[in-house]
Amino acid sequence: MSDTGRKDMTDKAQEKLTPESQKSTLDQAKEGVTDAADKVAGTVQPGDDKSISQKVFDSTSTEPGEKSYLETAQNTVKDAVEYVEKTATDIANKITDSTK
Image 1: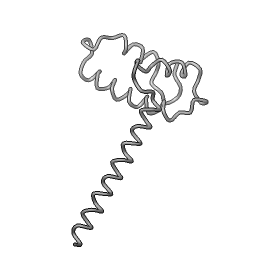
Image 2: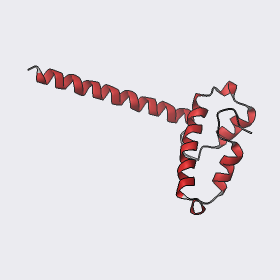
Image 3: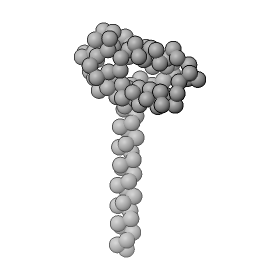
Image 4: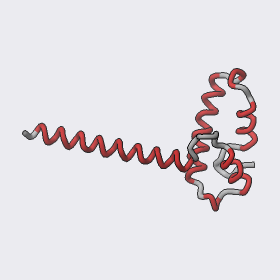
C-alpha cells in the first residue's frame, strides 16, 4: 500500500521485475510518466507525512549513485533559476544594444 497520490508500491515492484524487452512501448512510456509523477510527489511530500512503508520504499527506490528525489528537485529548480537569469541577462543586453 502506498500513500495517497503516490504510485502503488506493488506496481513499482512489478515494473522493476519485468524485463524491458517484455514491455510494450506504451507500457514503457506509461511507466516513465508515472515514475516521474511519483518522484515529484515523493519530493514534495514531507517526510513526517509519509507512512513508514512509504519512507522505506522511497529510501530504497533510488539506484546506487542516483541522486535522491530531493537532490533531483533542488537541481531542477537551480537549473530553472539559472536559465531565467541567463534569459533576463540576454534580454537586457539586447535592449541595451538596440538603444546604442
